[in-house]
Structure formats: C-alpha cells, structure tokens
Amino acid sequence: MGAKISIDSATLMNKGLEMIEARWLFNLRPDQIEVVVHPQSIIHSLVQFEDGSIKAQMGLPDMKLPIQYAMAFPQRIPNAFPRYDFKKPNTLTFEEPDTKTFRNLALAMEALHKGGNMPCILNAANEIAVFAFLRNRIGFLDMTEVVEQTMRKTTFIEKPSLEEYFESDGEARNFAATLIHL
Image 1 (cartoon, helix red, strand yellow):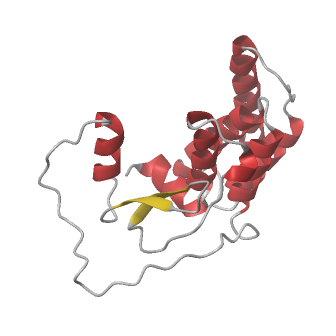
Image 2: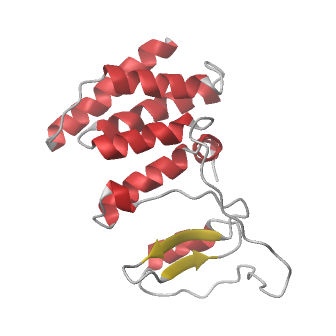
C-alpha cells in the first residue's frame, strides 16, 4: 500500500477518511454511514438500500481490484489477478470499531458530523502527524493527539469557500507542525 496508507490503516484513520469521502461521493447524511471492521478484508464495501437488500464489493485482501474497478467504472477490465475461491473454508466476521482505542476514527466521525471545514482540518493535521511519525519525530500514539489538538485550535468555518478551505488546510498544517516542532 504505501507508508501513509499503512499508518492510516493501523490507526483506522483510513476508515474515517472513507466515511467523509462516502458522504460527498454519494451525497449521504453522516447518520447514513457506518464503519464495520472486517478482519479478513474480503468485503471492501457494503451498501444497504432502502428495501434492506445489500450489495457488496468483494475480492481478495488486495486493493488492486477495488482500485481497478473504481478507475474503470462502469467498464470491467479483464485481469490476471488471483480469484476468491468460495469453495475454500473461510469465515467472514464483522465487528464494531473500537473508537476508544482507535481515537482517530472517533475524531474523523466528529469531523464528519460537524462538517464545514473540520474534515479538511482533520486531514491536514493527520498528514503532518503521519509525516512526523514516519520520520521518527513523534510516537505512534502521539499522532492522534496532534490531530485532536489541531481540530480544537484551528478556526472552524461552518460554510467555507474554496479559498477558506485552502486557508484552513494551511492553518491546520502550520499548527500541527508547531506541536511537533517541525
């Protein structure tokens, strides 16, 4: 995957960012989006419709196929990727996320529900925190603290303009950097 995405996966920030993406990509309300932990990583997404039916995007625990699907949609491109074998014994399990241990997910949910420029602030602070962690400037658990403090101290704008998004991003990055002494 790459260093940043691996760290975001380990902190569950990736799930929080995916919730924010889903809100905008599919014009959903925050209360329509949930995170479910699926340790086997076979199901990459689930959508439940008004009638209760569910569609899933499934595949092996590798992001090549979901990325190919997203890039080629609505076309399907043949590939030589390994296939999931339903005949092999496998159990698919699902769990509630532990937002006490994985506070980044809770912070992302907070940003999603607050709206405005808060998701932008969250993302900017997370990028600085992960950058610092990857360079051994802060510890693993310090990343969440940087994100949380930046969310508390950066100016919230309920209905930001595009220019205000850019300003919020810069303000959040600068504040996060001061916490780390970059």
